[in-house]
Length: 320
Image (cartoon, rainbow, N blue to C red; front, side, top):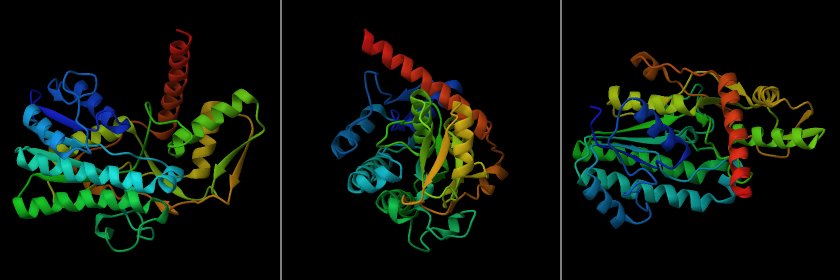
């Protein structure tokens, strides 16, 4: 993949998509098409004709598919239909357009929620389709599974150079910190920051704190996506993870330390834990030569610093 290649990041305005654009730019790729705020922004993914016109006009050679709405457990339960439909439209419009317009290679990025709830840990691609997924994210997971299956179908029917990857839980600067759509890291940072400012005696954490999750700093995930695009061409999905899992309780303690919150952490057992354990077997990726650069504590520090900067920027905009 030469640095002058035309590259399209579908979902360049999303948390992960923006990190992929950032990583490509840092590596000297200057011909990135469909970036928001440019003359030719990415199309409406709900409009198949608009997507097709974009591909015809922009003629991308390489495509990263990071588009589609996401949310945490609360958002997945509240907007399950919206999330599923939005992601299905991305799959059904972007992937066929890539085939029609002769894309040299496409990487479709899915989430670890595609794995069966009770699959053997760490999660291996051989476990896909062997059981039901976690109910709290089932609708979203089915849409992501559709993307994986469609890439596989195009490889078999048309010999299309399409691959799919499954990401660990991403976090980092630019994450969604809103109460409605934040994932666990961003949600804990926001709540503990607010509790510190309000001198609140306690912060509630969803669930028992026992579930374990694998977290990957968003810039590491972007780097893994670029690495997979360059070095992986298998028919099976490839896991993009660190190989390190952390309990929600330990994560909450780390966030409390980073934020400087002095109060109590109360685990609300009336709230869903989600999957009991969700760690990826990323051995194939690591054997190809990729390793993460940012450990969890440093990543949390950088994420909190970014959160504080966003507060300052928002306040400045409001005052002006």
